[in-house]
Image (tube, rainbow over all chains, first blue to last red; front, side, top):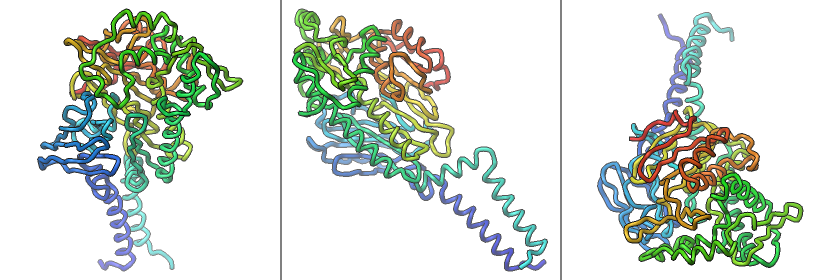
Length: 125
Length: 365
C-alpha cells in the first residue's frame, strides 16, 4: 500500500495539533509555577522565585530592614524580619496557596504551583 | 481537486480522533482551560491597606482587568485610610461632634452596610468601635513594636469610655440625600478594617467581571472571592487555616462566592499568660473569649434585608467579626438564619462547629 503525500500532510497536521495540546498542558510551557511548587518571595523591589529541593537561606531587603527566608526540603519560612507581629509570619509553609507575610517590612513568602497534596488556590485566614 | 475516498476516509478518521479526545467528558473544558491558563493568565500581588492583595485572572483582557482592579483597590484605600489626611474616614473623625461631612458614594455604602450588620448582630459588630480599639492599642497599624510589654487597659477606663457614648453605631448618621455622614459624638472614630477589605475584594471582582474575565480569584489578606471555576478545573480549592498551628483546618471547593475569616491570632498581645486580641466586644469592652476563629462562606449571594446586594466578601468579612463576638451560640444562630451563608467556628478549647450546609468541607491533614 503506497502512502500519498496528502496522507502524510494530514497525519502531520494531526500530530502538530496533538503536540500543541501536549505543550499547553500545565507544566510544560508554563513551567514550574503550575507543574510543581515554587517558593515566591515578594518585596516592594522585586520578586524572587526559589525552587524547593536545595536547602538554603535567602536574604531580601524589606522596607524596614533585611529579611531571611529559609528553604528546607519542600517547605519554607521567614526566619528573620523586623516584624514584631509574629503571628503573621512565623511557621513553615509547604502547600501551594499558603502565604506568610511580614507586612510591616512588606515581605511576602508564598507558594505557587501544585503538588499531590491539597492543591490549594488560596487560604482564608 | 476532488478528494479520493481513501483520503476522505483518512481525514474523517483523523478529525474523529481529535474530536473524540477533545470532547471526551471533561477534556474539552480541560483543553480550553489549559489554553487560556497558558496564554491569558495574569497574576499579581500588591501591598495595600496594611495587607496583601493577590489577584489571579484568566481571560483575553486579564492584564488590563487586573491593572484596573488594583487601581480601584488603591483608590478605595485612599478613601478609607484613616491615617491619610483628607481621606473620607479621616475627615469624618476630624469633624466628629461638629458637622456632617460629604463623602464618596462608596463610603456611604460602607457605613450604611456596616450599620445594617450592627443591627443584625445586636451591636456585636460595630464600626464605631474605633476609640475602644485605640484604648487597647490595636490601632497602631504596622507599628507593632508598641505591643511589646503591652498590658490591657484598666476596667474603669474602659467603662468610662463606653459610658461616654462614643462607641455606638447609631451615632454614625448617614444621609443619602446629601451624601453625608455625621459622627455625632466628639471623639468618635471608625474601625473599618472588618468590612473595608472585603469591599475592596468585591470591587476588584466586579471590575474583572466587567472586563469579561470568566475565571478569577481575588485574595485580600485572606478575604477571598472567586469568579467561575479555575481554568480546566471544577472549581477553586481554598484552605481554612487552623487557628493554633500552621496547618489547614479544612478545604472547600467552589466555583464562585466569597469566604472570609476572623481569628484571635491576627492582632494580639500576651500579658501574664493571657492572650488579648483585637476582636473587642463593644458592650463589655473586652476581647471576645469563646471563639478562636470564625470562617464565613457565601456560595451564592441572596437578598438580605440588612445588607446591600453585590458585596458578598464584605458581608463574609463583617459577619466573621460579628459572629466571633456574638460567640458560638448566638453567632451560629444568626448564621443559620441567613440563606446562603455558611460558617465554621473553632472554639478556644478546639471544638469545630459547622453550619448545616458546610457538610461538604474536606477535613484538613
